[in-house]
Image (cartoon, rainbow, N blue to C red; front, side, top):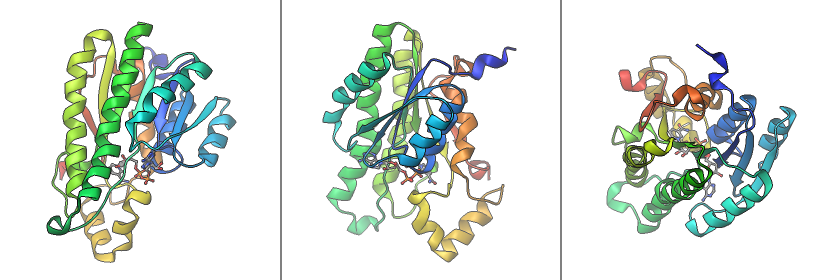
Length: 253
Ligand code: NAD
């Protein structure tokens, strides 16, 4: 067993939505494993940039609204102009909208599907084309959810998007595995980030969720570190189309 299987030295990883939360945790982990980071954000990723640079890695700060896939070709051109290569894509940017299904509006449907699913597909397509041209393979990591497996409550567009992410991960893995491109997903459980602030603020939901998590705690961005480095590295070369739950045991319950 070679233990440098997990190292990413000399590689370049694009991480969308890495100014905070799980994206920040994954960008830092990839940088710790040796990768330079291209961060795609709507607002300044000040803290992430400083932490990546403190590790001696480069951080390229690109701005885009992932609700509009029109930004993708320009992002790739800028990333390649400055780094010369792309090896890893983490489709992390995501949003959630909460309302009863009977009242759920079209804008809340479209926005969530556009950011969480449509942009992940077209960014993956653009990076896969580049990886095929480079001839070195690549790693695409999508961020799924417990709601890729379960229905959830009052989050119908989020559930549809994350169920779609899990299906799309398998579909793309089937087409691209022969080109050395691994497409996999991580399904975080209940993690303490902005995305779950409303749930954690609701005392009874918070208690019910905690009582159902076998580890007895909310997950943290640092809990994504090992799984993302595994899926970004040679260690996962024969893992294709899989959605890895990082959930403190939630799905096993
Ligand atoms: P978060 O709200 O802290 O982070 C979301 C990130 O996506 C932020 O960086 C945000 O700026 C970015 N983003 C949102 N809309 C964007 C847009 N239009 N363009 C560019 N960037 C945009 O929440 P998080 O929990 O860190 O979420 C990260 C991912 O993990 C999301 O895909 C989310 O659905 C998923 N997830 C989170 C949990 C959880 O419990 N927190 C569980 C399962 C899945």
